[in-house]
Amino acid sequence: MLFPEYRPRRMRQSEAFRRMIRETVLTVDDLILPLFAIDGKGVQNPISSMPGHFQFSIDNLIKTAKEAENLGIPAIMLFGVPSKKDALATSAYAKDGIVQKAVKALKDKLSNMVIITDVCLCQYMDHGHCGFVQGNSIDNDASLDLLARTALSHAKAGADMVAPSDMMDGRVAEIREILDENNFSNTPIMSYSAKYCSAYYGPFRQAAHSAPQFGDRRTYQMDPANALEAIREATMDIEEGADIIMIKPALSYLDIIYRIREEIDLPVAAYNVSGEYAMVKAADKMGWIDGKKVMMETLTSIKRAGADMILTYFAMEAAELLKNHQK
Image 1: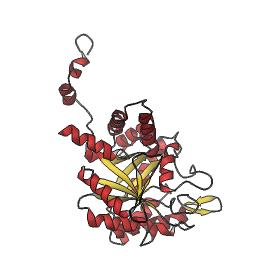
Image 2: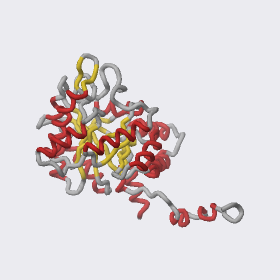
Image 3: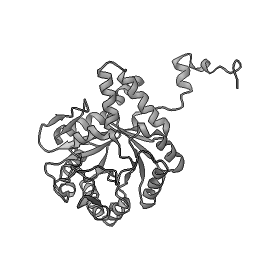
Image 4: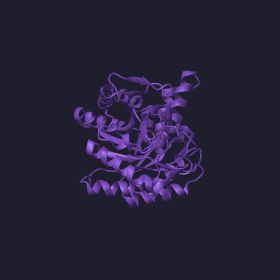
């Protein structure tokens, strides 16, 4: 089809036309809201690098989760900010750990929302790495038991889904095995399969108090230059028992989302991470962009690339806009 016989602008002339031929439609069902739980009562600590987000004590966490539920957001991703850290991450799998307490309280107060828990060790380790440290290196195999114990403790507390984010080799199989052995065979695993060693995580590390105390995470998180490796990682996690595959970050890795969507037939999640959120908020505050329009364009691009669900700090704002648009 060539001009002048074909004129693509014909179908762009009105909003009604544009709606009729729109290929990608973002809905509130696509959104997952990350939240941070901390000990205490009446606590709502602002996260300076993530305007509009807070470390919540459980009472305030419940209020925020209820607001999200009322907006139609189907799920939250829960991160814990523990009151103590040690070399074995004991707070990560303690029965009275912050995540475990928060999950129990949330399940008691929320009827329909899916509670997903992040399974990692970094914010619970005194050195800030995602696994057990021997000398100055991360011991992959010694970390697997700690990760599996953490996932099991979350399931016992009532988590609907667990999401290992540590990037240790073999952790999905270890978690699947321990869940099945303890009668949690119906608990799904959302695996951070292609988690890149990214500079976009800075604000999150402030929020979760999880910055490494030495070195970096390049020995276990993926090299940003690699794409084929992401497919291998996703395939391995599927074979080990993952139910959902996640790519993190999202915006700079849209090509990875697309390639994995083309290669696998499981649901694909993408994490629109803290640095991506913070940049939009900062530019909007300076008046350089229209933050709401950039937010919606960003989320639509992630879905267009192939994501079935999007973890995003924009979830509440986007849900509000989508709700108002439907009125």
